[in-house]
Length: 540
Image (tube, rainbow, N blue to C red):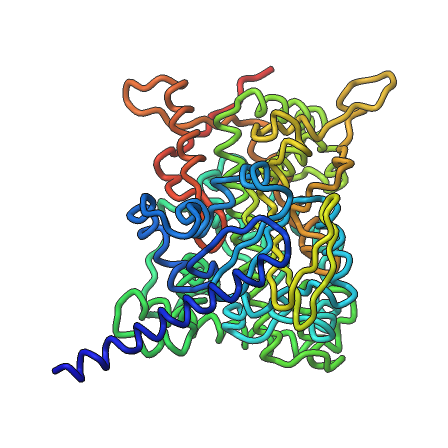
């Protein structure tokens, strides 16, 4: 009996000893760097902790673990909760000493631009092991560095052009009477798969959504099922899902994964038959197939891997950004009217479905709404870089530090985008007008307004450098087109409960915005608590 107890206890003791030793060793390394240190007894990249932290932290928050920062920083999504406060307290950079790797959190615009610039030279590379789960359907652009990344970038970059932006505009500028205002995921999915992959389908919203079964799914149903269960599919992978298919929910997800992979193979074969006949620039799937069959740059598995990762990355980021924007506009009717003034001036009374893409550059207020939303509610809270087997010198303000080998360098977007040093005393206020400047001169103010990017360089919502988001303009065009479609003739407000005033309803919407956290991306955790209603805009 004693031997059984030891056999059970020994692995636990060895794990705890290994963890303690790793933490002690990394703390000694961190002390030599000269930055403020936060002791994190659990590594932020520990997958089990990532899943369980939100349940454990509230229980242990009063226990003095580490140096008092455990409950503040040792859970997923603390960056959104804390914003710039840790950097105001501790400085432009501080260090996590963990049992795994040490992490430097950085909130200094000049230092961040230096890190991004030096990535091109082979320093501060993206730690692709943190994204290895995105290889679920095959290697792709998100999980590669160096020459392999350049190869994938060459295959995909050409498809993000004005031709694809025109497709995005035409697909996003839809009739404002549809129910898509409450179905941002469906909207984002529809635009993405048509513009990038040549697929189209009729819209149906959350209220008339079809149930997933074990039968034949459409491309849309299979992809939507995967995206709605992204954490599970990425954590377990298709093979494990198949082994656990006896569990009903996992069985449905496994079925969707198998059918989606079959659709991707069919898409490959379909486009493979026409690549020699069609030499013009095409959408993303055409570019990938051509790169595989004619240029021999990527394999079929890599084509499939990229189809999935672009579906994943391009869909959820856009959907969450639209959801935040709609809720923010419902809370701020004065911003709605400010934006709608511009839309009515630029678009006039033209049929929404006929609004021309040439109007996009004139819709500067409408674009500013997106820029400001991503400043405070970016789906990515941070960007990960790091050193490999060698150290690197980094100047942070007036201090120069030596970043040790195998250290994560985290560009803290949420802190950078909310620090009063860069954004002023109203840095936490959602204020799209901060992006607009009117050129001097005569004429209507709408014709003289322009977007002014901040001179301090503290805005990198789509990242920068080599690893900047290739779909930056794609997402901007889509967001602006949706705003035009929805807000020229309509207004949005929180749905009031019986006997509730509009002021109280807007207060509830503010609470819903505050109830935001990190799952796979930053998102409102319970948007259903504040449904939105759309009404015709009063005629001016």
